[in-house]
Length: 113
Image (cartoon, rainbow, N blue to C red; front, side):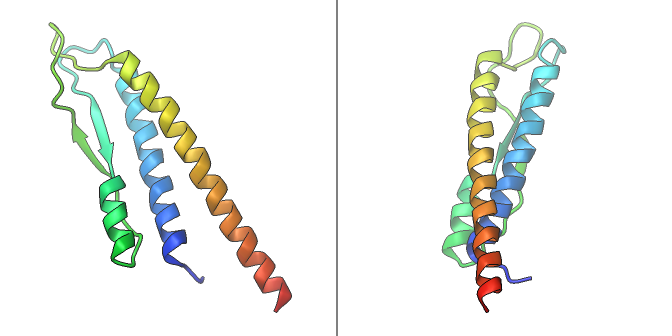
């Protein structure tokens, strides 16, 4: 299949955002678990660098949050997780729409040949 840097970057973004959504869900599910440390998923800086280098392919990185903990050792903040979930959902929706438009453009180009 023909893959451009844009398509590779969109695919990497979708993978990263999906990984972040799972981490957020896991964080929320463990909000009352003593000593649970929230997970944070990063990929945006690496993705920007990869695109600049002409690739667009990156893997998301999951790390343990170093944010302060509550008395029970848990550091999940429900307000922060909720906002991150909304933002991640919107970014995921945008990325999937952009990917869909890429495929539609490719399909249209193939039909005209």
